[in-house]
Amino acid sequence: MMDQILVLLKQWLVGWFPPALQPWVSVVLTVAAILGVFGALFAVATVFERKGLGRIQNRYGPNRVGIPFTNIRLAGFGQPMADGIKALIKEDFVPATADKVIHFLAPLALLAPVTLTFAVLPYGRNMAPIDLDAGLLYFFAVAAGSELAVFMAGWSSRNKYSLLGAMRAIAQMISYEIPLILSSVTVVMTVGSLSLVKIVQSQDFTLLNAQTGQTSLLPNWFVFTPWGLAGFVLFLIAATAESNRAPFDLPEGESEIVAGYFLEYSGFKFAIFFMAEYFEMFAGGAMAATLFLGGYTAPLSWLAWIPTWVWFFAKVMAFIFLLIWVRGTIPRLRMDQLMNFAWKFMLPMTLLNLVVVGLWHFLGTGVARWMVCSALVLGAYAALGRGLAGRKIGRRVYQFAS
Image (cartoon, rainbow, N blue to C red; front, side, top):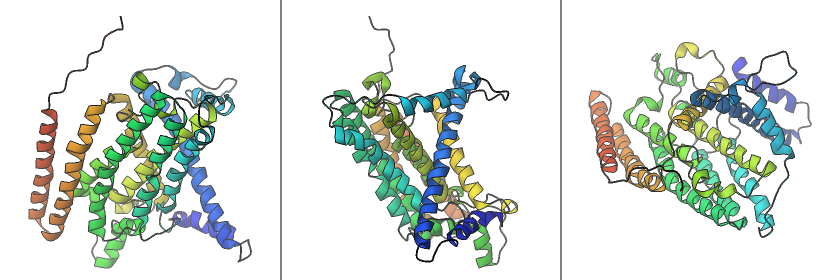
């Protein structure tokens, strides 16, 4: 009952309207629920990130500044609330020489494609807004529109630093988009479908137990295979780079190019860029969970009583916490390191992983395929990693300006 309570609630609300209006009301309720849930997650994630980085870096504000005139101790919630109010009321400055129309449309053009990717994600059992046969293809096709929005922001500002940040961002996003897509092809080869709902169902041990008549206590997630683990790690790295998060935050590069492609943005327009970055994180985490972690399925059979949508959002938030941890611990890469890593490690690994998943299928069941596939993945990782680390890269030198 609890698993389908949201579905039943929507059906009950739609039933109050005439039959001619019910499809439109259903669409409006679905869109409102998606925007409301992910908007709330955006607010919560910013607080968690501030508090997490504050703990890692031992900074006072994020964990000690509370809300004045309250009896309840809400340490750390004062700063994000103040920043949110500031973003809403701060004056919007537009450069005199900027292309004002494109400058205005760029933040919206970045937020819209990311928001559209939420339309095909299965949030729980019977909770996919649109079950497309080519749902995975739709996800990547729509998300690819963000490159155009980034270029719009950099070019319309009429600022050389903004344009440089936009070009770096596009180079990075295109470079890591290739391994991002190729790492998901392994799942498509295994399931034989581009439907995200079918991909999740192929990892649902309750359905598999009903089909095979056997009882399985462990999850049937793809991450528990050699090719699945390699694809999962490669997908996480590429998704982090696609969302321009540390250590891949070179498009912003405040120590090199001031603030990247959104240098000339302030107030609410900058807040939209900030929201779009978090929405990209949510979309990347949701897709990683769908492809490799069973989507909305429970990790163990005796935990299946917990609603499926709870498991889905728990996996997404685990991905967010992982990105926060990485941001607080790993320094930013150089541009040459970033591109070398994409083209000389990520791309060969994803191509080899396609061969591995083919061998996994044709070798049949047994220990042999585990040994062969694991040896190929580990051998490629060692060879490519040694080759990338063996390149002569100059040391970083930090010095004060004279």
